[in-house]
Length: 107
Image (cartoon, rainbow, N blue to C red; front, side, top):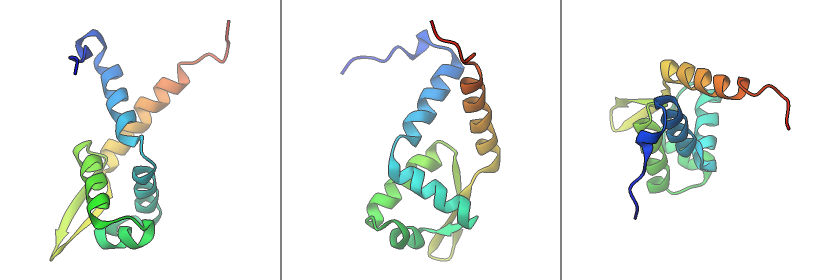
């Protein structure tokens, strides 16, 4: 496998790419939509909601948590997850700036 050339790109470009990769799975989008609509969620609720295996849900939650998009609190034997508000604002700003940079004109 080749070495990535992330040093050729700006910090913003690398951050957008990492974010896009993290969001690039429908299960992660479904998890985020569920967390947004419920404001909080316990891991086992997601298994019932999405119909995916516990291990699969855990893997996607780990990806989202590693990116800082969600945060979790331990409550007994369960972990309660929610959207990380400061990271969510950062994501909105990054993606908004990216999409707003297009003037609407082509060739």
